[in-house]
Image 1: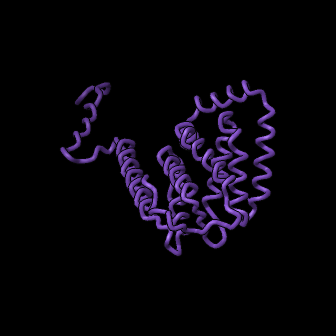
Image 2 (image 1 turned 180 degrees about the vertical axis):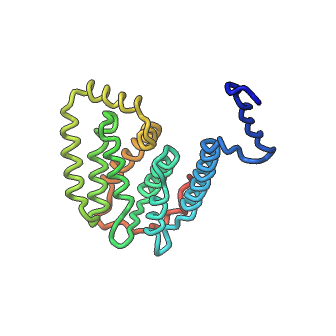
Image 3 (image 1 turned 120 degrees about the vertical axis):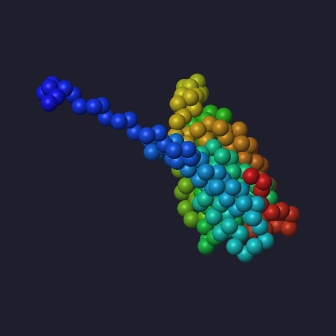
Length: 221
């Protein structure tokens, strides 16, 4: 008989995974691959939605809503969001669905996200003027623009050096998708806001048509 102190045989090592079989210990790697494929599929889908936009369609407002609803919060999605908004502003388009414009709301959201940027702050009153001029029937647009203007007034009273330092700290510490997207799209958003201010001062006395003859199909992503 074996001595009582004798240890049993060491446990056998698990067999290596056969060629082509998934490694059961690499769930993280497989998940990352699945997420990458999902992101790529969604990216292509929103590209197609943008290309399919047609201002002449009766449901153009719903089309635009669908694009905004499909976009995420990452840098690529925000770039598409800004590209779409610029295309709408540039072509004097004012898409609405059931008396509501998602585009106007997206402009308000962008204004809030970049309000603390000292290089954007001075552009915001022009954006609010654009919203009041081109979307006067948007539910709640008056109180919203008043609140946003009050906020810009308060920030305008902050020491510019402190404001710039605070914004730099925000950008340097950006980790959430939306914060990284803001950091990477600052220049595009400022260009959009500059265009909004320009359009606000040129708005016709009569409300613009939903689909002017000069508008082309959807923007290139």
